[in-house]
Length: 60
Image (tube, rainbow, N blue to C red; front, side, top):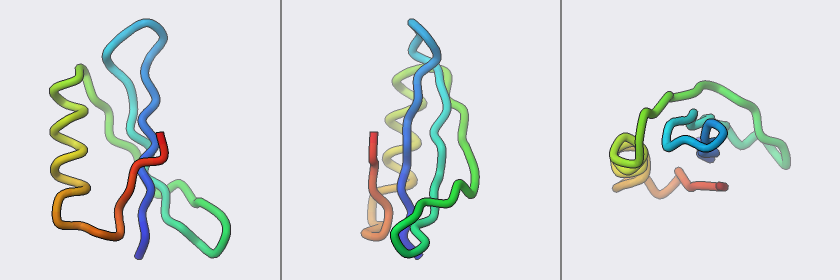
C-alpha cells in the first residue's frame, strides 16, 4: 500500500493537520489525519511515518 502525507498548517501558526492519503490508481483517497501542535510534532510524525517505510512519501 502506498501512502502520501499532506501537511497543512493552521493560518499563521506552527500547528496543523497531516492528512494521510492512500494511492488508489491515479487518485488519492483520504484515509486519516494526524494533528500536530508545532514543528517538533511535525518532525516526529515524519520520522515515525516515513523512516524505514519506502511506500510513504510527503506531497506537501
